Image (cartoon, rainbow, N blue to C red; front, side, top):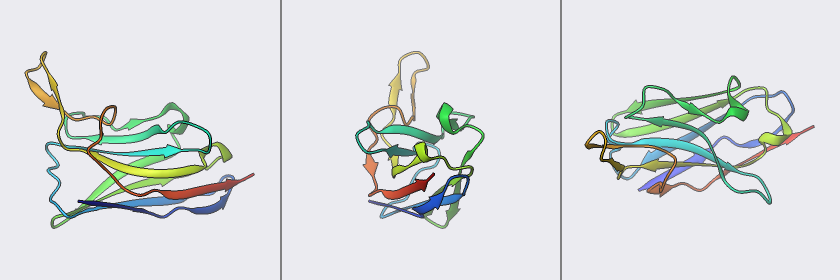
Length: 135
């Protein structure tokens, strides 16, 4: 299983970047998975940025990126690619961006089924791509 993130770079404040994450090596079950973007700035903890889940009707966005970032997904054969369109970049958006997938899910005793989320224990992680935003 490989997740390959790309698209990072050095940009000025207010610019845009589009990150891509190609999931390969296995067929991601889009009905039983979540795929997310995370970022880690120097000296800070990793934080979730956005998440697409098969068990949620809404795409999750961190408050700090709502209205500026858009996550999407493309499927071509057995290859799934997740995108993160980042507009209006700010210096505080800088960091290493990672993509990850949850394929094992979390059991819900309330619903009696598994749900998929980016909040806990992602199963596979890709190497990150660096985003630098100059002020």
